[in-house]
Amino acid sequence: MNFYARLFRYAVWIGIIADLVLGIPGIFAPNWTLSLVGMTTSPHDALWISLASTMLVFLAFVYMPGANDPYRYPVNAWLSVLARPPGVGFFFFLYPGLYPAFGLLDLSLTIIQLPLLLLTMFASRSKADDQAKALALAKTLSSRPFEYDGSTFEEVKSVAFSGRYEGKLPYIFGLTPWAIVRLFNDSCRNLSDKSDYLPLFTKLIHSNGICYTGVWRIDQKSVYTGYFAYGAEGLCLARLSVAGLFLNRGLFPRAFGIGGKVFPTMNPNEKVKPGNFVTVDHLSGTWVRNIIDTQVTNFPTIGLDPAPNIVNRIIFRLMDTRPGYRQLHPISTLGVKPGEPVVTPDLMMLQVAEGTPRNNARDFRDELRLKNYPGHKIVYTINVKNFEEVGWTRIGSIEFTEDAISEGGDKRIQFWIPRDRPNS
Image (cartoon, rainbow, N blue to C red):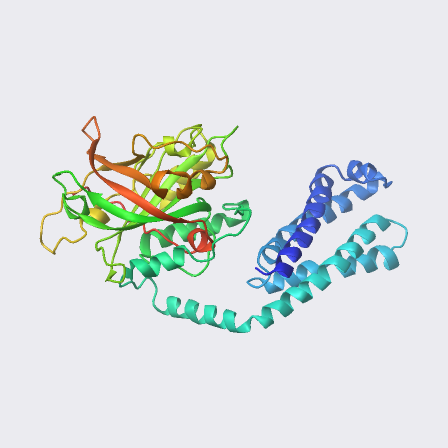
């Protein structure tokens, strides 16, 4: 969003927080709440104060969509502002001197929010061409849901590397209480839509990341097919990210993941359908000092953290039979002709090659910048096994040679997750 829209968001959230701070205790202890802010009440007022507090809390929730995205929810945005002036009239003119502090609060918020909303909407009109293009793209996508005929590596890379961040890296908030419904929608989309990139959207779990490009190589003989077979070599684009709130090493564990696309070609301009993979280390997070010291797999453990347990064992379980297990047949079928046998490993584990030096940057994105490593590259080994096997077998590597920390990587690249099916 533009500068004025961001200021408007902050201004409305100030009002929302003020309403919640007054409204929630006002529901359960109305007289105590008013006395806390220096206002006297009688016991007979408690019922009506509690009712007004309840309405205040519900109004605060109504304001939230317009605060977060005034262009998508303009009615909520206007309501959040136009609901304040009646409060000014109520407390200053209809019942003057009774609760003047509330009238002063509404007046202050009106003076701040109204000009910002007008500037926000005016700025949106000045960008009408860009919005028209985005709307046209959205209509095209909606008229052809999930239609997909592949992409070129160069095309996907240009999207992933677009909008590089300058200066201080942003912190993108992902899953919030009011985005639970969207989590269901996005999860269903990931199981159905094979598109390599989408119009701008916010990733709800792995919101912050860094994109790499490089080459996928299988240099050891194996029994597997497709791009797990010996000699397979293709271009690769990956996004390395952390789930949850904590990006910096320190007092909290971090859940690290790598989502990738293997293109069955070394020609960056050849249109193909890449094979996607999604890997994570431990869904409750690990305490490693350096993020490259952890290994990621397509069947991560969950741990005791309630958030990943709710997401994986309840929400994702409604959509798939083994929600934590990301199958690998999109890679084992690359280049395999219809009717030919397909052999897929059950599990894949990626880990940084031995001898890679460590970088102690606090933010994992700074740690993973390729300029910090010899030759400006990082190599991950590709290791596989089946469920009944004990040890991992190294069959190849991914050599990453370019990186970007960008809006395109954080808000446009998508990794298709196949639905669970019997292993083949």
